[in-house]
Amino acid sequence: MSRFLSQRFSTLTAYTPGEQPKIKNIIKLNSNELPYPPSKAVSAAVKESSENLNRYCDIGCTRLREALGANLKVAPEKIIMTNGSDEILNFAFMAYGDKPFAFPDISYGFYTVFCALHKIAYEEIPLNEELGINPEDYIGIGKNIVIANPNAPTGLALPLSDIERIVASNPDNIVIIDEAYIDFGGESAIGLIDRYENLMVTRTFSKSFALAGARLGFGIANEKLIADMDLIKFSTNPYNVNSLTQAAGLAAVETADYYMSCCDKIKETRAYTATALRELGFKVIGEDANFLFASSDKISGEELLTKLRERAIIVRHFSAERIKNYNRITIGTREQMETLIKSIKEIIS
Ligand SMILES: *Cc1c(COP(=O)(O)O)cnc(C)c1O
Image (tube, rainbow, N blue to C red; front, side, top):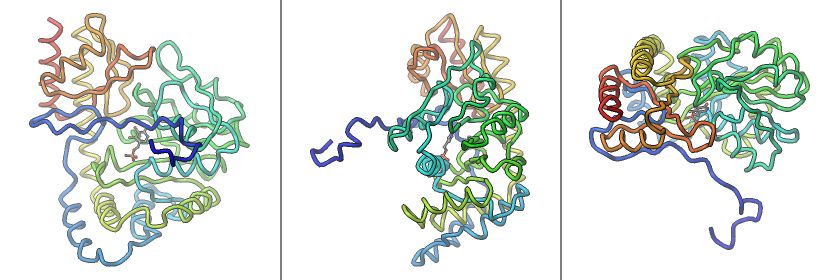
């Protein structure tokens, strides 16, 4: 860093994204992207939209919010579009950081980074023995709460009844439910936003809608919380969602059926992969997201990562003590997963 960097950032440790390697014929199972391309309508819409790039984009993302609202049965006024869901999460941490946050000790790595960035106190609540969230730990905790549901990298979802108890028991704190993986399993909390003024749900187009590269996410909450988010948005980057991405998102929502059938394929392939891994003696945790979290007594997590990489298969490993024997494996196409299983068989025999 330079000697000019503000003191307040001098000890900041940034988030480490999954790598985007440039290896040929790689089987990329490390960032939970969809292995299928966007629908045909998306590239046509982007091309058409590109003809108006001389103009600023619609700061309200009006057409996109209307289509999304109709799709999710939520009023467009209760939706805010952002540059990936990382941005809505950042806005929320920034807006509500006077009070400490609580979240699981094993979850999305960005939560601790946002706390460090905005100097917010936080408590990491340990997952239970089976790497699940114990809802009782959050009942009446009196802190702001962020829970990824399904959680990452464990792939386990909490039932909606538990989410509702957590939200209801912390009426003076914000509860954010990060539903990045909800299209692959679990029950959404969107239906609760009118009942609980402290609830915000965040979503992304990066996973189930095959638009990771376009950077599109959103928050869903009552109008007052959305006004808070707009305050931060208009104070940092009013044009946060560019017109190409808005066009891509609108076309994606209009062809939602295609994406839901992609999610069905992922769920089938996930079941196949989980069974195959268990047959090889692996312990597989949750099956609610588009990835599996797996470990084996026969090989360390790190060795498996390395040996798969030699075969151009990239998975994600985390070095935290409790989970260092695991790898997070994104569900790819059936063919990719067959190659993965074959490779693991060779590696452990
Ligand atoms: C991928 C992911 C996000 C962020 O996705 P964006 O690409 O920024 O939309 C947020 N939360 C969780 C739990 C994720 O896995």
